[in-house]
Length: 207
Image 1 (cartoon, helix red, strand yellow):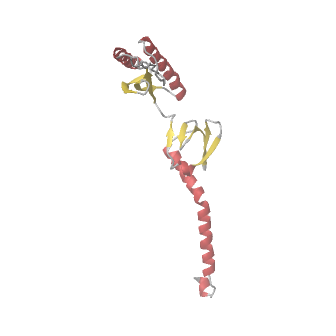
Image 2 (cartoon, rainbow, N blue to C red; image 1 turned 180 degrees about the vertical axis):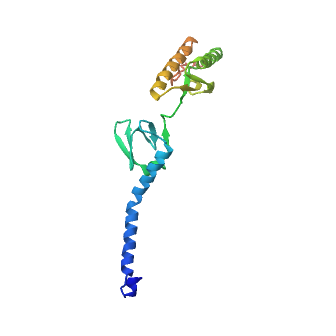
Image 3 (cartoon, helix red, strand yellow; image 1 turned 120 degrees about the vertical axis):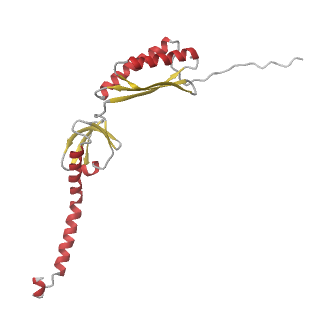
């Protein structure tokens, strides 16, 4: 206002300062976004250093959480850097925070398995899961679900208590081997795609 009173035109200068402020604001937008994202990650704690997570389609272990970005060590041992601004709005699946792991598999039994043997197999599988030390009793399901193209299908659904994924795999392996023994001890086995060929001979008409 003082300069204007002295006859100095300040309009051009004010316009230039305005454009400069806009340019600085646009340039700092991503930096501010990442800082806000870092604050969000620190407050919400969707993951911590050492957690095994899935971020989008990427699986890996969190190695470093910085002010601007987070570094993930992938299963291929590569290092991926994510801007915290993106992570604060991304869908993150944290496997480390799990207290139980899902065991879900389908046993494809041979069509030669009789109804009596099928009932005995189902009963023994339910008993196995019920008495297994690390299997959670709530939610156990063992059902004959379908006649498949080459098998009679039995679905097994249960949760296993484990501290990490490696421990879960070891406990799941033990349960699966016990299931295999039950199937074999009842005179059945696992089916595989096969074909049946029927041979016949036409008879010639009599004279």
